[in-house]
Length: 206
Ligand code: IMP
Ligand code: MG
Image (tube, rainbow, N blue to C red):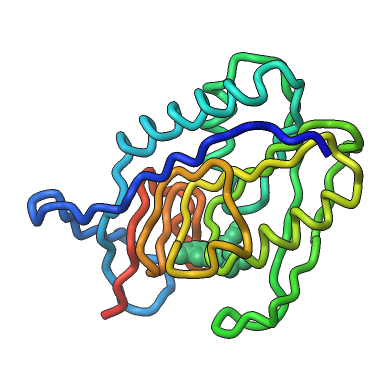
């Protein structure tokens, strides 16, 4: 497998000042336990960072006709913004992965609910995820796609919780490191809700 040079450009998480802290409530609220939200990454920061990532991806894959793999469902908003900043030939495909077991304890097993339509044999593949938490999903996806003989596989994730196992799933392009807290927005959900928020927010249950 040919290796593509890349550099990892991590943006450390910085807690905002009290002024920038914002409590967010929906009216009417979704049927979830009582909670409020604290914005961690604002819309404008997301926009700027996605632009940076697009520049990095262009530098590495711009002349390689890559297949951009959107990992459903969480990455759909990020991918939609990212691909519109790319100005070179590529195609987009989709897959859906889910972990067995309940949401509290992961069994460590991942299954493919929906597979790619295209062959990735001899193609350069960029897997785009919303968040790398334990790293199990990305590790599984990488191993399963590698078995299909791509020219290369690189991983792009908008968010990364580095408190968890970084070695398990090295990320080639990472938008933001965040604390080990549950977040929603910009495609990420809580029981299916809040994917539409234009920012990333931490959920505080009250
Ligand atoms: P993994 O633990 O790296 O396998 O993470 C797998 C999946 O868990 C991610 O793709 C998300 O769908 C979900 N996930 C992990 N952390 C969060 C979070 O803070 N908010 C919403 N979904 C999350
Ligand atoms: Mg996901």
